[in-house]
Image (cartoon, rainbow, N blue to C red; front, side, top):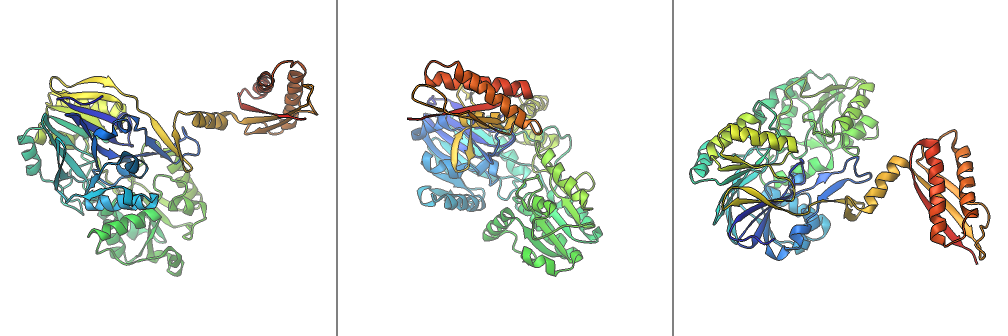
Length: 546
């Protein structure tokens, strides 16, 4: 697929899902990419931490890709850069803070010298072939979130990225209503827009509004206080620094990502007036009522600081009477993991405070009132919802039409959307998919390795070892071992029966080794199914003795 005299949109990630944002725009034979993110592993991918987009479509057309433009530094927008940037071989474009985070990833991967990283000033402009880009700052829970105004020979795109409206963002200067109205006055063909918070009938709320309740909660705490929040939210870190200062508590950061964001922010002129913080190893020297720890792990991440505190294997222990404030919102899918940590804290007598008990968090994504205002200011001809599950995107499409937007089109990853000429429509479908980072290896999420991993985790594994002599006779009894098969007290009896069934299959064998392997596999699996109702993976190893 090579774009002609037309303007195309194609999502390779981030549509029908929240996370892993990868968006392509095409015209006059060329493509540009906006964002290159990842998402995190789940129960679907046992043992996997990171899930990546499959970029096969654009990898096959890399000669036509002009560059990758990054809207902001959240992992679901830049996290996959370190895995694909060198291979794609095109320049990157980002503001200074976002570029700092990207540079760190490239250095960790050892490819910093192979990738051209261009720093664009806040509100800056640049051109990539037939595409003219201009960054416009919008409020979000991340520094320097920059929407993209993309001018093409066929019309203008406003690519929102993640955003909200905030008159008191604490850090940064988002674009004003007047500036956004000016963009709308010049004409916007399509608004490609964040759908994450579309079901919220209220505005997301100002970042500046959370300080009062955070300060009140910290002042009310009698002993040690831990506040967990998204490490990327530098404005929240600024607020928490002020809360620590005004409550008379010494500040401590626990979690590598918090230190990374703080250092990147300070290197770019932000967070300069944070109070001095202490190392986690020095916390024990202070009275419990004199310290406030800001920690990672509010989404239940098992290796993050808060999870380790709850388990009792962190240098900063928690005990009865301490307080943990969750200054964050539960991301859908993380409820169980967060609940596990909260229950562990409750067993120790630790008090927990969430956004349900106090106003300690605001979202970084727009509710319906904010969406309505952006539609009014930009007056797009069409809204393309992205950054949401299907229900979110369908709801935004309905809402946009109800607010007077002429057209709204809901697409999925892989749908090729022709925005113009003619009526916006889906004109084709390209293969998309997911890759997983498994250890140090990237493999297909639907490949045989992951299929076997899931089967093993659900059903268990049985190994059968057989020794065969020169005359096709078994040398001794087969050896059967089971792993993860749901048998406890009956395991020995099961193994005895499985061994007998394997012996019968061997006795009936008079053909080649592959038929022997398959007959034994089926016999042992039938036995396991009778005993457990499960169908474990049965691996049969045959040794040919001379």
